[in-house]
Length: 338
Ligand code: AKB
Image (cartoon, rainbow, N blue to C red):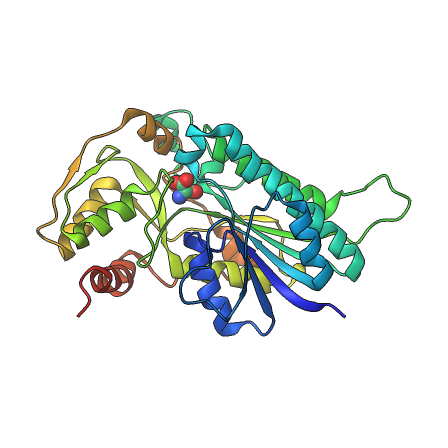
């Protein structure tokens, strides 16, 4: 008999590291982590780590010959700025990688006779507001509005959401027998901020970069204007949301893709919060017009009513608690251990 397992791709990335840290504490089944990078420090011996490429089908075949995978957290992706520099590679990793895993999860669902849960992080990058006026007028964007991404990463996320829905609801719709289909669930995250990892390759990174630079005592030039506003969330809330959505009974879910958010800040409000804790921080604004245009196309806020209603989503960290209790003490300790 194959052992039951949970697969986490992109496990060495920012969300991956935080999620795996939580899963090792609460999961009663084998965790298999997959990443192009080595296993994150701290999980050695607690997970089976495969250092490899999600596009490697023979590696995935070996995996399912040994394990019955019942839940997949598919976190592997190239983020928005990096994807603009290498759009073809982004498409390969973000779309083809997702397709390979969706196919594997579909086959596994049939073999098991019950749906594999496929949990997929999407992003505010799936939205694209055409100009600042529209962004101001449509501040709290709902899931079905403004789905016109302007980045490769945003296009990839939006399309993979649709692929996930297809594999959950319409896969092999012309076959004589309806297959057991996978159970796709996705969250559109705002900009995430972790106290323990530094982001790389994203366009919402100016927030966390400001904070980490201030804690290190380094000057930071923010690459967007003072008034640019997007939603943010503390990483522990992102992990809680992933776990809560995974655990939600299917009968309570009215959608497969949910917005979630915590607080929205303009870049200057973010700077002011950083200055409260690190009064000597040297933060200037030197907009990079091209990266700024990407952030300008993202919503100022998200309407997360369906997530709150269907599966009880709420953020534990509002802005104050996020900075005062989570970010500042942990980031300070990271760079200035006692
Ligand atoms: C990025 O900036 O690419 C990500 C995102 C908003 O999804 N942080």
